Image (cartoon, rainbow, N blue to C red):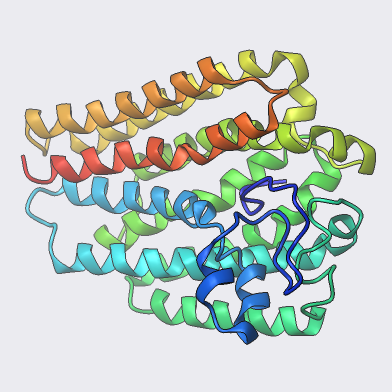
Length: 328
């Protein structure tokens, strides 16, 4: 059902309203003021992996853009990273809230999700809509500090966010729609840094989409049986026993597209060491995906969750080495 569903805890929720599929001992359940907990749970603030997966393409975009213009990295780059971090948290929260509004009947029919704030009655639909507006306005305020091209791209992304929750109802490829939404930050952050869009960030965006199909198919194998019962479509159900073959193809596509993006961005402006470090980041990213594929057992739900969550590390490998290329 997507990376807004962040863990597969099967124990009953605690009396105070803990969500059943949230990790025990998370910061929301332990430290957040009680009145805010239902709304923070609605935003998946207790499950940060989705924020990471939304942020990482932004990091790729801004860091590769800065590396493509040697000497351009500075306080603007630092602010774009900070703004994207805050924006990813807020827009992931708004997107998850919208997803829960549209899926409230489905969530109420599944044991793993019926304790979530809307189907359990902790938050009304009206309250959830108000929460979306608040999060979106805060994110928009951050967006307004970016280059006008990035502002327009940010506004355009709202259509992708709005469509995604419905994709699993009409296509076997909802992971594509998730990828379209979750990786838009690669282009937006590039535009925020450079003021324009070129082929390199578009290829980076396409690489991110292939990556999203890879990791979210792994995730969707957890819910394969429930999805079949309630008629929800996914690539996990579509690929079935050929999942490894399909995922190998998306792994290769992600690595090739990201390699092309790096080469287009850095040749001939950047130094050879900078290019090699950035390419090493791509290959380290690809090696991590290959490791995941070797470990994958589609019938092991807990194992699928662990591999899914490890994609934070895969994406950060590329981001950290893109950052390293700035200093060469």
